[in-house]
Image (cartoon, rainbow, N blue to C red; front, side, top):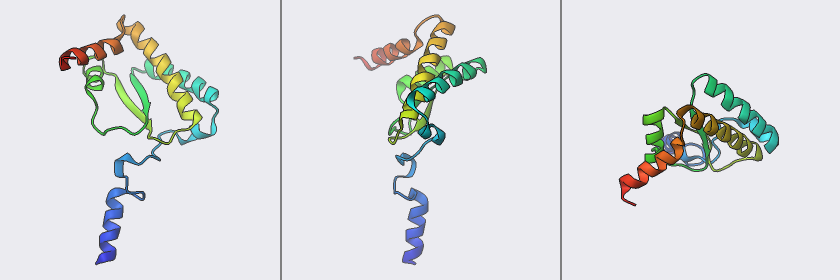
Length: 132
């Protein structure tokens, strides 16, 4: 019975006991073998392709809450911009490079499309709503 309980807990929490906050989570493990510049170039290309297909998102990494914050909700509700976690707290130069290239290109394209800085708008809206 003890063994069954241990196995059940292991299945619920994952092998490291972190569950959804497992720091080893990565969407693009092949980025680990790329240099930062190679991955940045790929990120620029991926963002252009996604934008052309109507996919608007920003890549994130680091240990995050499973609940989107107010700014992320604002971007999704008003502009259809999704937040896309690509890695948790274990990142490589390739992951950093891809996110840098992807986000810089995507932000530029979205600001052009909506003809103003929607990211600043979201920050300002959240700040004014919270009374800060």
